[in-house]
View 1 (tube, rainbow, N blue to C red):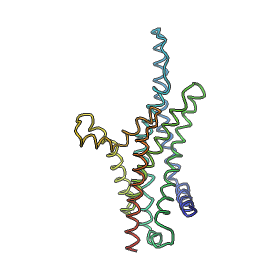
View 2: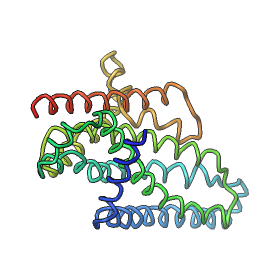
View 3: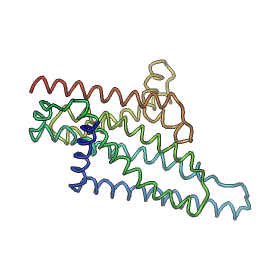
Length: 255
């Protein structure tokens, strides 16, 4: 565990020692801030129009603001996750330090978990930027915090899965651009697989829809923790890290 934490701290240090982490945090915060401002503006305008029409039905902050914004965070994450993972192993291979890493006494799984945890912590920091916006809703309104907490759990699990996929892809090349582009393509594919259920109900379409990460996020966005969705994300994380371990093992044999 000590080796994992050491590697994790080293990776986090490399993120924050360069402009990478600060650029990602700034851009993520600005993009989500724009989404939040638009969602809040539509909510206020709709409320005023309802008052002018004499309607007295209450508006639901969780359903009309928080739930759509959580889905927006999930989409924006598709673009930022490749930027987080593309350097994890590709930079090691480019600089030639991957051979030292592969032949070191540190176990492969410790290296992989250390780097993956560092990426996950950086992704959690991005999510923390969005929490600052939601804080205004609690300051001036009275939304239910439980669905929001469940939604963040879903975002963290979904991000963990996609980060595991990106970690594996980063071991396949020494070019960060290729690693980032490939990770984005795979993440986008895992997102759009759900679309096939809209026009086909065959078994193969059901299987593809089940493999989509957004299919399993819907329940979290509604504030519901479904065990099958948790198992899906944890299984995806395990498979991504397992594939990374096998890729690292091949590097060790070649070193």
